[in-house]
Length: 361
Image (cartoon, rainbow, N blue to C red; front, side):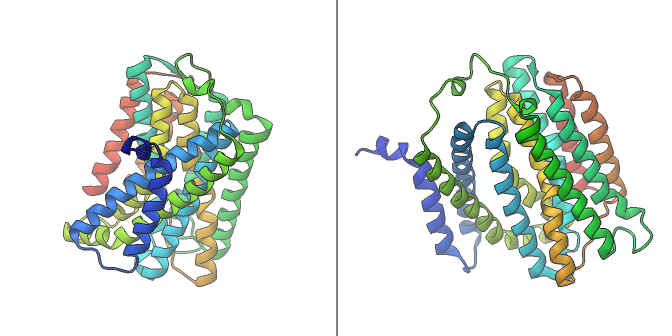
């Protein structure tokens, strides 16, 4: 077996090597150079996770494939947030808020923007089904306001917070709305989320993988995602120290967490847009943001209520304005089901504004 044959086995080699590397550095201190190697290992694990998610997606068909990746990444995001909250206690009361807000802005502006821009550059104009994307976008706007904006205006507790009963209501509402969305996505109106066939997309006519290969890919997907969150957790002290050293706002930590956990879906969405499967990109972007709230909030609320952890969900005023602008612009740019380069540029400007105003509030 020559090196070319070995390279062809990279989808299997990378997850196993990443797991061994994670085991080797677990509990060790990370000097600067070693932290850089962990970043590289994290990126390779992300690439492997996207590959195996696409194998599963090809076997299951859309939209089940994108749902698998959204569920796996969101569960890992929740585990990462909760582990950091338990470690820092009161110092991380705003971490879930910052992470969820960042995930929404990254998905709705960053991921959507770059997919529309690259898709427009390669294919001039692309189509997606507004019936599915519009319902997901509306659910996302509703949950975002309930979770991130309403705590600023309730009077039963201090500004920016909910009482335990309010937290439980919001958590159950978030979970219920997400479950309804999954029901229409996978059962009742599955056709709303199916990508339109493209003559240039070879994956449409490719032979689906066998059951054994799909099972192996599912195991390797979970292994890759565990490595992603493991590397992210090991890197989090380095991230926090860099944030403090440069006197950056604490919200930067939430942005970094959201960027890391959304890397697999972002890469998969970009690849789909370049292959003229924009519907898949929309499913990934909107679905991941919706799952980030619909799954993360119930689990975080449960932990906070049972363990009496502090939780501040209300956004700052500038963030409320940016969030409102995102949904207003999104309802306009995505309202026709036809996209071009201009729409991608608009969303990327909003994403750049989010990053800049976080660093320079």
